[in-house]
Amino acid sequence: MDLGLKGKVALVTGAGQGIGKASALALAEEGCNVAICDINQETMEQAAEEIEAKGEVLAVYADVTKSEETDNFVAQAAEKFGRIDILVNNAGTGRLSDLMELPEEEFRYNMDLMFFGLIRCSKAVIPHMREQGWGRIINISSIFGKQPGGLVDYDAIKAAVIMFTKDLANYLAKDNILVNAVCPGPIRTLLWEGPGQLGDQLGGMLGMSSQEAITWFAEQNIPLGHHGDPEDIANMVAFLASEKAKFITGQAINVDGGMVKVCV
Ligand code: NAD
Picture 1 (tube, rainbow, N blue to C red):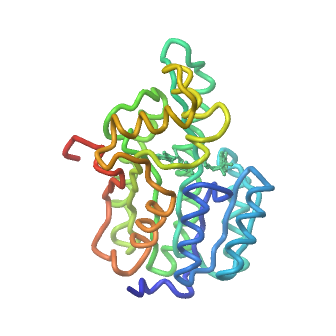
Picture 2: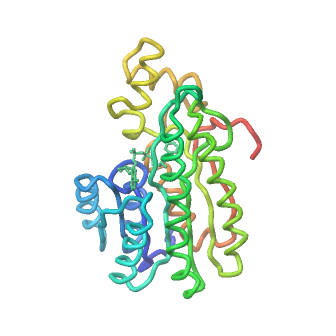
């Protein structure tokens, strides 16, 4: 299927690895010029090299918690490519958290990263999209924005992302800017497999290795019995970015191996 994305300009935040990198690669594969940002210079440059094999790329160090840096990212992308068509708000993190032990500063930082960061980037691209009368904003939320997953701060923040997505979709519909959220279930990235990350955290609680805990979690909780791959999310991102999705806005679409049990 030709998604009709050739020549579009796509921005992806937190694209040095994982879901962001896979999304940037999928969009480049479809013919987009891609601008990526991250706070990890090394992984960002490696990702940029891989993307370059498929199309034009711009990599800019930018922390989405800092508006000067997100504004600079968007300005550099507009300067290099002449327009901005697609924004994928992906930068984020996720750890099991206990309400009574979670420091308020950490909760606030995560809110700044995964909620206000997304608002900052959206506000920076909207004038470009309005001028063109075409745009796509895709927010990476989580199924834990729909049902609790044991990450107290994260669950609340990802729920806020879904509601913001729906409000922004209404606000921008007249400008032909479509706004949707993708809600991934558990996806095999360093968020699960990295040192001290979810696999290690869960393994510590269950007395298992990280890999055993990841397998145990999937068998207990995911009807398909395994984690998804970053490309499973990237494929949905590319579809939502495309002209094929021209009547879809304000949605929060699960890509989760059947894990969500509520009707939202
Ligand atoms: P990841 O940790 O592999 O990648 C996250 C990327 O974001 C990294 O490259 C990191 O350097 C970057 N980043 C972190 N803070 C940043 C900042 N302040 N500014 C710019 N970049 C920053 O994680 P992932 O699994 O690929 O997750 C990507 C998104 O998907 C996150 O929003 C996450 O919450 C969401 N998500 C992941 C899963 C999963 O199971 N992996 C499930 C649901 C939702």
